[in-house]
Length: 289
Figure 1 (cartoon, rainbow, N blue to C red):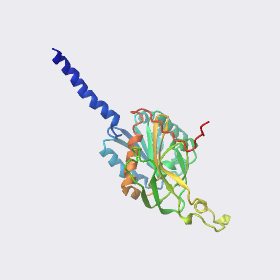
Figure 2: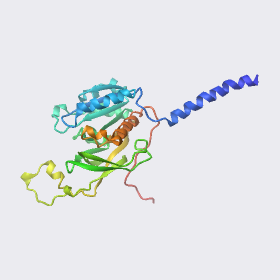
Figure 3: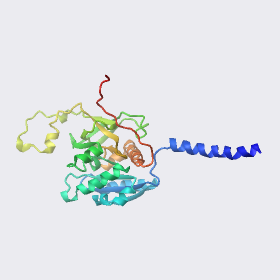
Figure 4: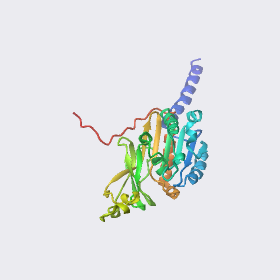
């Protein structure tokens, strides 16, 4: 009798232990996740971005809905059901009436505060709302300029433990834009880039009539500056993942760039399903008293 009483207990342990280990150690996944892909604007290949990523997301088991404007952010029911929003919408050179308005931003903000992830790359996320400081705070940074125009630059991984950049080495991006950005100093930075070219620094005295915003970019004395390229942060319960790489979709031909972007999507999609992760990483720290 004792033998038969032990069997159910043993079977219970057998089935419970693997289940517990799987939930604790499994990597993030997009399988079964509800994703909204929003694209638009007049630069950075918005429609082509959706054409590239949507099949990849669906092949991983995600349910993806695609929209070519921001009005979807006003649909509270749909936003509540969404696990991840991927945005590829640069507002530079975009008519004002097509940019994100306050009502649409509030819908996006509420969804993220409640746990929906938000992710993207380059200007599609880092220059999507140039007039809304609350949006920029939510993302963790804002595009300022791309000194040197189309150039080559190196990316250094500074966090090799985080699952997004684990086992990925430093790499070089060629024929693309190297973003100089204003940054929240409390985001968790995973990779950085250094501005090394002498051509960023002109000695000529420009006249007022010669200056436009592109001219001023190369006048900045920025050689030696180090700027974050890839980061993650929390906003309410939602997870934000951003990479400044991706001026051209050919940047994603680099295995490192595509791998990091997909890992970032997976991580950002988990905000509603895992315990909160404290990732506030202040660069400035108070001295111990």
